[in-house]
View 1 (cartoon, rainbow, N blue to C red):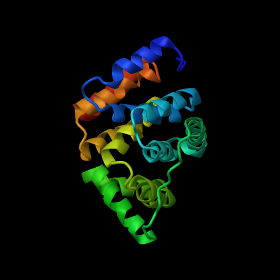
View 2: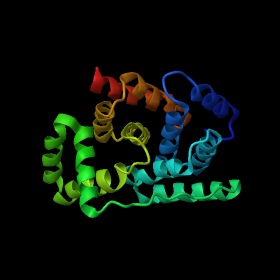
View 3: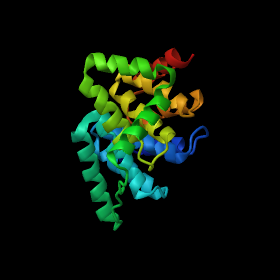
View 4: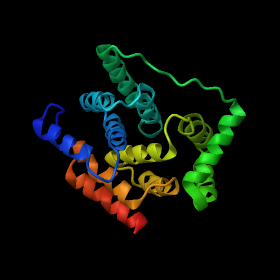
Length: 221
């Protein structure tokens, strides 16, 4: 659906304040999904909605930035271009995170967060990644969980629910299931994850949402 579709606008309005999730979490989810799908018009609509709901620029930017880990630099760059256009049109100032951690602190933060997200399966994850590629194993901790996901702009819960949204619309089943478990490890309930996934009908078909809800039930029930 197009962002100017009155049916879509009505659907977004109905979902935004539905009990079960905060409006901010829903917007993070939709923005993450639209960036993953490379749908710039939808991305703009959700950025506009984020600012209408008083979400700070730096948080909106972080949702877009972290997506490079899950759908690549091209999608993240396009999302940032859309963000910059909205900032210009609204007369808003950009806001950037100022990194003050040294390299060792970044790695340690990455280890701590990765262990929290994966829980008892952390050691197995590392073994599996080492088997696939020692480079990807190191980058996952240092680059993914250290440099990006442990930045104190969003909470681990906000990040994991947004990651689920991106992976769901891309149907990356293996990673999606891992991050469903990860969301639980950082405090998400089944009901919150259900709401995140079911709300993705503003970006993808009900059929795809139903498939993803099947993964959720297979993972947590």
